[in-house]
Length: 474
View 1: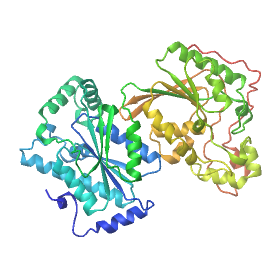
View 2: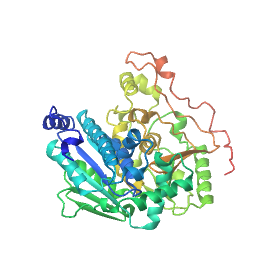
View 3: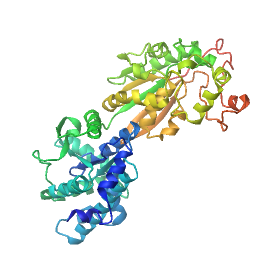
View 4: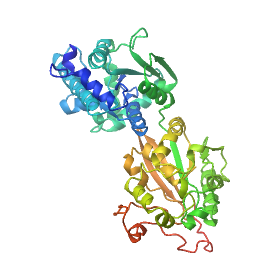
C-alpha cells in the first residue's frame, strides 16, 4: 500500500498547509501521536486521557479512533473477519477506514489543531513506516508512537473487563458473553501481524509497560512530544480510584459577601469541619491523604481528619488583585467597567494586579499530573480552583468552567470509570450562604446597578451568627 493510498492527492500542497498550521500555533510543527499495541492493552483509555490533558493545558488535540471508523464502515462485521490477513475483502475494509481516519487527522491539523491522536493497533512495522512517510516525509509533521505493552496477566484481565464495559463493539452482548468474545478475539489475533517497535528505529516513541510500571523513551523531539511524555510519565490507569473535593467551610468573608482574603471559618464553617472529619474518620478510607491550600480556612477545615495533610500554594484561591476583600457591590461601585469586562469573559478576565481563571488552570498543571497518580485523596480548596480541577476531570468546555457549581458544605466524589468519572454530591446538612453567581444577561459597560445586583448572591440574610447548626447523621 503506497502512501498515496492513505489520503494524499496531487492537488494538495502539504508543505504549504503544514507551514500555515504551524504558524497558527507559534511556529511549532504539528504532532501526530499514533498508538501501537495489541487489543485490550489500555490504548484507548490513555489516548482519551491524553487528549483531555492536552486540551486543558492550552493545546488543540483530538482523538481519532480506528475502531470508531470501522464500526461506521462495517457495523455488522466481526473483528475476527476484519483482522484476517488472508482475506482480501477484510484488507480493503481496513485500508478504507484507516484512510478515513488519517484523512480526518490531516484535516484537523489543517483547520488549526496542534495534535492529532490516532488510536489503533498499528501492529505491523510496514504500517508504522507508512504513517511516518506520510506525516513526516510528505506533510512535514512530527509523529510520536506510544506502544502499550501488558505482560502482567492480572492487568490484562482488568483491561479486558474495561474493554467490555467501554467498547461499543460489545454493548449488545451480556457481560460474560462479551468477555468470552474478546478473549476469543485475542487468542485468534494473528500474532505474526504484530511487531514490537524496533529499538533501532528512527521513530520517536514511548514504550508504556504494564500501565506505567516501566517506561522506555526514544528520540523525543520538540515541545509537543515533551508535553506528551510529561503526561504519560505521570499517568497510572487504576480501576479503583476515588478522589474527593470540597471547599473550605463557610468563612467569615463568605458571610459578608467579600471575595478572597485569608479569614477564619464562621461558626457554621467550623461545624462543617467537625462533620467532615467525622465522615472521613468513620469511613476509614485506606491510604487517605489530604491536600489544602495555604489559606487558614482550608487548613481549619482539615482539622480533625486523621490523615496526612499537605498545604499546596497552587490550590490557593484566585487572586482578585485590587479587588481582594471587596464585595461585588463595592466592585460595581468603584470599578463598574472592570466588573462588566469580567462578566463578558469570566474565563479570560484578569483582575488588575490579580489573576484570571486561565492563570489558575496554568498553575494547576502540576497538581493535575499528581492527581493522575493519586488515589484516595481529599482536596480542600476554593470555589474557582475547584471549578478548574473539576472542569479537567469532567471534560467541561473551557468557557463553562467559571460557572460550574461548587457549593459550600458539599463533598464532590469522583470515581473512575474508564477515561470518564462517576460524580456524587454528598451534601452536609449544615446551613451556609450561597456564593454562586450566574452570568448576568446584560454585560454591557453602561448597564445599570440594578442589572448587576440581580445575580449577586445574598449575604447576611439569615443572621447566621446566632443560628445553631443542624446535625446530620453520617
